[in-house]
Length: 369
Image (cartoon, rainbow, N blue to C red; front, side):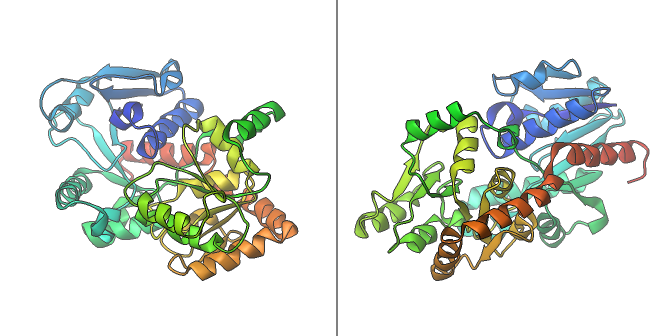
């Protein structure tokens, strides 16, 4: 088979959609090297360079010009005689020639519909239009969670039979055992405390970091935060200053993926009480790191966290506080839950995900979907 991908995010996004795109192509080339994988974009970058070294993966420069991604990329895939075109971030090209090609699109979430207050009117309108067009044009839609599948049916009015859930995994670094030297260097570089709880993710209102900070107020539990700051950070900063928590909350910047993997493993607890997620990759990263997780009892997060993570009402910082304290004071319970969760998270490993993706592609080609 010859499978073409919209590789804009593959080359130009550092997290989120970029990680999804790179991991998807990486695992397909690893487990199904007999196929040709074509990465379509105006240009390439250093990101994903190691994946492009695989002989089954090829970069093809797309046509240039205004809206070329929307108007020309599909035809470029057809010129390459691709059997399948896969849009990796909720979009598909608008124009196609007569050459037969199957169309797949991955939709990660519809948060902009559920929580419009976090997005501008322009962004909401454009996103919804693009997603609707892609959902209509696709032969098959991949949802990254059952929660996202339900939202696609509800908000985009798509028949359930057209959607298949294929979970995503996480970066290989979180599955590796770092050396003692790497661990020591990371501890020293960032001045990490001996024990701490960890939060990872963009520091924005939806991720709910303020309630985590409120949850540790009045305790001596250190909190380490890794994530890009937004305007919402000012609310957190104000609370920290008012309650004299400056020496208790650590904000880290310039953290590499390998260093982040070490930090996950060093943490006693991973805390992620987001109000809503399409999937929640940081939860998966924590479980692969054998770090017990406290997360929200909402959206897809119980799907990601499994039966042995600890769940909270994200709106109730007292609930967050009590669950953190319970685990902080109970090493045996932390270890038990972490070990059981590590067993659970194997379903998000590379091989089962690659097999599901390839089964979907093969069924499409054989007109069985």
